[in-house]
Length: 273
Image (cartoon, rainbow, N blue to C red; front, side, top):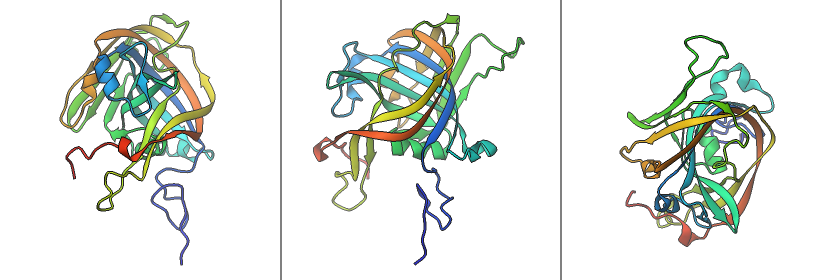
């Protein structure tokens, strides 16, 4: 029998066709972080089992990120389409056994490898189109003082935000600072077992070798727009905080299982086949 190998599908004779290569995965990105508060009831509604509302109810952040990533070989840097992508996601604050944490209920990326790599880590990624203002460090008319990000998917504008950096930040962003705990979920297709997922667990993101640039902060704006088959707009701002811009790098090769979730904590089918 022929041997096939690889880290993720598709497995292949040479083991190089996998959409996602084996970790470690190295990341560096240009970040826009916008802090805000949403309706506390809407935040509580998206918390996975095991997480409780935060003492500062409704505390959230959105992040627009322009990423470059690669494995240990760095070969993606020579084929930029395999390592560059953009991302938009929402994090909400919560508590886990008395510890401050965050969780990500909604996230969009614009590349297939980032989508599947996110599912492996417990991020509920969907495909979308993310655009961000660039900076090249020159004094010219094409260099704006305000940085913008937009998200669209399936022909609909879903989010837009701006950050106007005015000063070096002493604290940096705090709404997305606590550890990230997500729900890792893979359903079954077997008849009669649709309500019994193959994988259903709380996981904590682990990273190492972090480095960060100077962080600049200033006023921010954010709008989330309703669209068919989307529910993120329930987390729209009711009060704004500050915005931040910076660059950040880290490496991922680990994921901690915090809790195996019970079958009765699995989501219902939602009336869909």
